[in-house]
Length: 138
Image: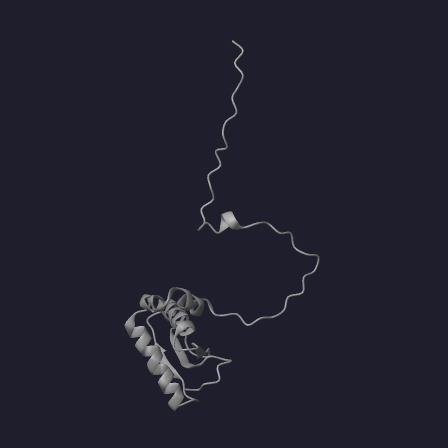
């Protein structure tokens, strides 16, 4: 009984067209590539462009309203800052992170949140203004 083994058909699955990694190849770095500084679209702005207005739905309406009112306040008082007190420094940092994410995709060109750092850790001194590089001030 000298059975000759049969060849097993290729069991490699077909790559999924949505699998980005399956379509990726490896490239070794060049000796010294010179990178040109390019302006990059903020991530949240890119998400809004790609996925549409549904991206704005992840932000609480109260936060959106607060940021929009702060932007109007800055337009009327360009040198002024707002002061918001939080229970903890962590709550302050979390709120600032979410507000900044919203600001990246707000309006037509996005906003920037400026802060002052000489306040207690749980106090946010901030303003919302036109994004740098954006010519329209209102």
